[in-house]
Image 1 (cartoon, one colour):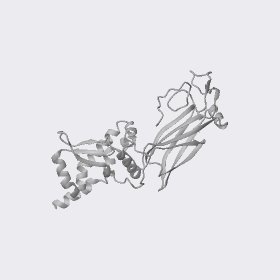
Image 2 (cartoon, one colour):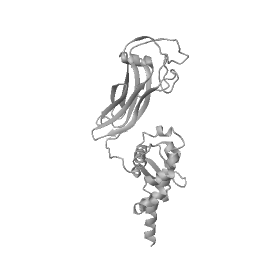
Image 3 (cartoon, one colour):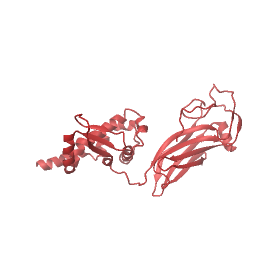
Image 4 (cartoon, helix red, strand yellow):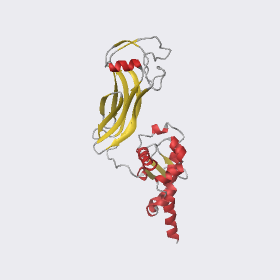
Length: 286
């Protein structure tokens, strides 16, 4: 339901990713901080623009900024008028679930003749445009926020890592993180052993299987910033994102992985399984 950034307009449109306007600041985005209670979720959305012509139209009520809210899971839709500054957005948790798409615009509320701006790119300087009511004159950021039905639903990273028997003849462990869970595939013999004995020595098993799987996933994600957008719909991604926020008070992105390191992040998420694993081995041998 989101508007394609490649959509072409027959007139200049103010955005943060085109050069139709120059030297103009536009902020149409959330603060990325979601406050969730049992019944409602609160989100702050910021609207700022410093183009004199657009501000004049807004003050004369000939244009307005709007936020479109859409939840694919529940088909919930809502349009909210925005005011300059910080806007408090409140959603009933009963109306939404999982991914909620946010998209903002500045639109005309009446027909405007000879629309122009001193901030137009030099290619449009001196040009005017006759625009109809409802025309988009600015586009904000497209964002996704996630609102889970149960605030305590996702707590353990291991709950989204599944160990399965490999269906191929490939030797050794393989990892697939393209689905809602992270799947670790073991050759048949190793999988049978894991299934029978892992529950008796969980920390040892985690060190041998889950820890390297997490390191692999983090290493792969750190290679490409776009991967964080590609996988943000996955359940495992949201669980790890929340865990990292709790443990490190940091945002989950490639820069964080590069600075903290995949090894340290993985060990801390699993509560340093090596120590407990070695203690188990020591106890058995002693």
